[in-house]
Length: 235
Length: 116
Image (tube, rainbow over all chains, first blue to last red; front, side, top):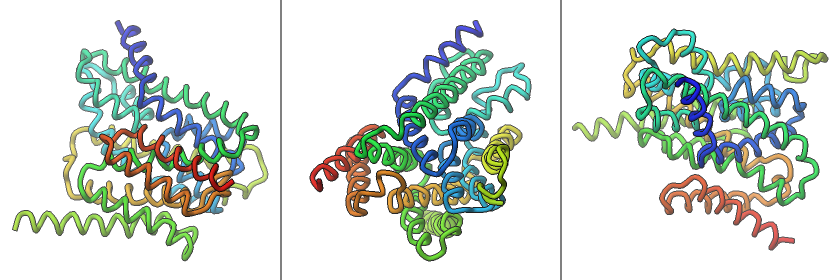
């Protein structure tokens, strides 16, 4: 039974959301190569970090010559969203006898795509077999995209410029649309529009502090907007 | 302490491990630990989500305005136009991510072809 549900999880990885994710990794591999990473470093980063926004921030930090503490801080700030995602997933995932270490291990696979798929499908799966299903889904997505990144890294130089340019647009477009769709409240949309403008603007004025600055200012303003509009709604 | 600071094979991997793995999995592990002890719509989580969203949006903005690779050879107007068209297509056509991506790519490639 466990193996059957594991394999069903593997199958769920080959779906439209899985395909879109793979296309974003095509873009990521090009980005990593452009930033000067080796093939081994690129594949290592895919497996260890997994969440795509965190990797793009890490590459951005490497490109701008950030120090390790600054890079780790920016990546950590971009990944705080993983905590509420895992908090929401754990009650769905947990069976009556699931050991804690299994949940800690499986949490590594949490990123936007596997999370969306899991929240959508776990409900229809017998509770004690949900961890097997998610293990199949998560591990397949990670391993398959490590392969995608490796292949793209190897052929990236031989691509015609138009194809290459199109690949570099994949990552921002994937985030632009999925981030808008995943916003829970209006504040998320406000934060996103502010971040889109503040990022490049601050990059010109204070490079190196652009990401953190845009996150703090954009997020703070969006949160103030959230409280203000809620107060108006209750008044 | 930058990515290129130390001339040895293991330094970039350590950089990725601390700057990438630790900085992401710490939040995942915290999520498991907190389990269901925290309310999904508490004010703290709204702030946390807004900060994270603005930061990722800043990364997107930089990738479009200051791109790398072959995309850097296109004009800023074309890139912003392609992204805007893709995003509008996403909003108008039932919020399908695939629709948004394809629309943006079509505009980008058409623009590159026309400026040849």
